[in-house]
Image (tube, rainbow, N blue to C red; front, side, top):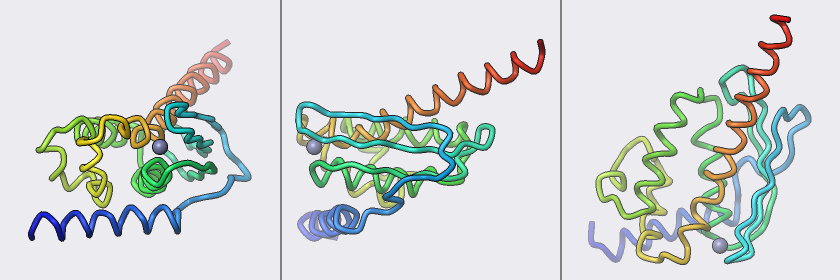
Length: 157
Ligand code: ZN
């Protein structure tokens, strides 16, 4: 595929997720809620997770901002829903590598449609927009791990 048409296709995927975001809204039984802002661009999201042990049984987000930040969040929620923390760590690492310009990561099937964001690597100012969702997810999973540790401690004593 010629470079121009590939770029157009990627543009379409990004705009589709921006206009019709997946998993947008709030969760009735969220166990984790993480607000995250990118002051450089004015993007803000709140990510809600419903954790079942180390599995994300459901995920939603609310927020507003540029198309990159909102489309990236929409794609991220699709990718991690139903997955275990161990699988998510790998996907998150590959996504970060792709956004930082790693050409191998940009062709990694594990990233699915999120590969449409590979072009962000050429625009350093937009890197924080693309990573906002993944930073929120990372913080959320860290909080969840803390909760699990606290619960284990409580049952032991
Ligand atoms: Zn942005």
